[in-house]
Amino acid sequence: IGAASLLRVLHGAGFSSLTRSAEFYGLGLALGNGDVTLLELANGYRGLAAGGVWRAVEWRAVDPGRPIAEDRRFVSAGAAALVLDILADPTARIPGFGIETPFDFPFQAAVKTGTSHHFTDNWAVGVTGGFTVAVWVGNFDGQPMRGVSGVTGAGPLLHRAMLVTARRYAPSELPSPRAAGATRARICALSGLRATAGCADLDEWFLPGTAPRQDCDWHRDGAVVWPAEYVEWAEQNGRIEAASETAVRTTAAIKTAARGGGAQFQIVSPRAGDRYEIPPGMDPRYATIALRASTTPGDGAVRWFIDGRRVFESRWALMPGTHVVRAVTRSGATDETRIEVTSPRR
Ligand SMILES: [Zn+2]
Image 1: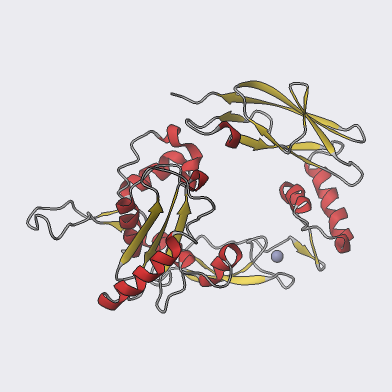
Image 2 (image 1 turned 60 degrees about the horizontal axis):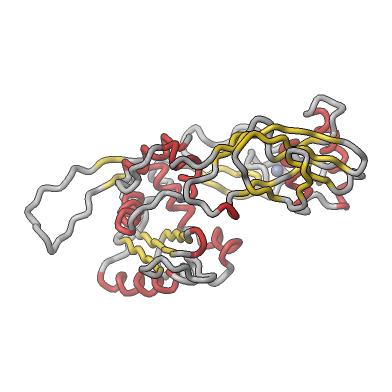
């Protein structure tokens, strides 16, 4: 885990365009903030379908006799199979993309889309056991396309290209998690722990030694008891209903206990001592952080102050320097954290 080890895996997978340091990319590397070529992307996904083994791209029309680099493994066969199983699951796409998507094929295929900052460009990759198709959509001068994402832009093109390719090359099966040694386990869909009688449960693949061992303790007596770190999120997202008043009370008690008793009110974001860096080249309008605090019934609206100045939005645009973030509830409870923001490196 961490940007440096992810960068090593990506280098292993053939992304040689990623020439900067792990510190330069930071954790955003996991979300795709590194610039790569479409060919590297296609070959990376092909490597997953090959069970986690990178292979040099071969241009058949050019210099067929030239020796090519040796194959190398960049992830385990188990990890490759699990990623493909997720990307090939049509029901997993429904929450994000809806029931009908351009990514349903009459054969097994794993699909991933991407949309860059400000809709400058988007791409979609489809991979089967037999072939890989990668599509890029954008303006060559870098002009943004308003509201066009990987689903609406590259998606329909990928769909047609996959069907045409399947007429010439057999899609065949993707590597299965079972063949890589994974087994199915029944887990709680909410907590990810081992399902108990009260849980909404689902079957999930686990590689040897990775299945959860603890029984779910979130579902108790027909209600959800949220662990302290999720209470604030659950409240803001309407996951704690009025009907489950018991759950709220139990949860609130756990929350208080977790904080060592008295202190009910707490800043959740940013955390004390957090250090931020404004990413190089990023439009300052997008370099913002969330201002969030835990609230208990009766606290009312929270007022935010940064370095003594009132902030009216729920996000704050980062400014270089050390800052004091203070939150105040209507009932007068306060919390304060100190954060540090550094300028972009040049
Ligand atoms: Zn559960």
